[in-house]
Length: 374
Ligand code: PFF
Image 1: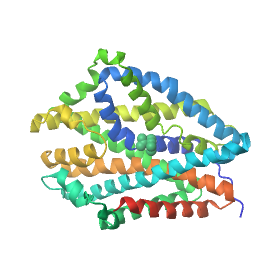
Image 2: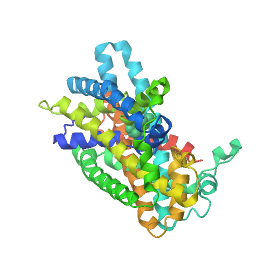
Image 3: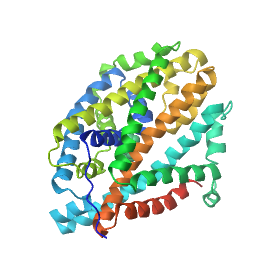
Image 4: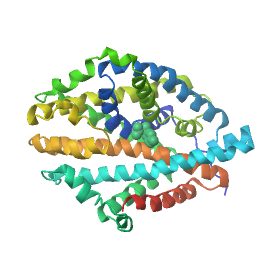
């Protein structure tokens, strides 16, 4: 069966799906650490420069290529030169493998949405994460032991992603982005507003506005800024290219690229104000130095934040679940975009329906992700 040609039914669906693809774990738990470790306030200068020099122009290039060719990365490379096609498939494979891991991180977060309702991680969140959640062990034998909760959660995340991606473009990705993105923004507004009322918040947020000008002469600071823009805008993963290939003829590419790039950066800077304020509160109440709290990734979300919720009092049972829901929604909207890359490429290559290629990608992906559930 020939694959049906999907087209966005509105520009807002495309823009929200694009922002959803960009706003992800990188914005929430990577950016604050990158900002803090690279000069605080003065980091905004290399960050804005890289947003303009690399971010906006790279998004525009991906849009232009997808919009012009209206097909998948592999078909575009083939059209340019047949010998280039394997390179495209290699890129698609890498994006797919990243997806299989990204699912697991979102799955851990899903577990924490439930745990946060009762602060079930107890007095030692560090140990709880490695022992009770991950069942981490030093020996290789653990690779054959499935961790039931992680497995169930990984399955649920794959199932929901499949349910979205296999649907018609507008009914699935379009509709979900229109719902999840506004909810995500609302949650972050609530968290940031609340965090600013916490005692000690200023210990945290002043870090964002206090520049260390000497950092600007450090090449690594500039590299970190460019790295953050690449990660956060999901550049080079052919997501923007894939989504732009579904645009109708009269679309305004430059306007869309600017909206997406600014929204993504606006989101991460705004979110960082909340994260820093909450960490400032923790420094004040627990005496742990601020620099020890600004970790990144799973350490920040699944260890430091549970510790904060342990000392936050009754509000923790509201802010805790909201915080993990925020990561869940941001992760899910990025996940469906990552999946769409492989799914679209397969449907274009073999003429499969949207549903068939999405199912294939999700089944294979789930099997690979199971390795991470051991
Ligand atoms: N931009 C998204 C994020 O910041 O989480 C999605 C993403 C970026 C996924 C980079 C994977 C990746 F390697």
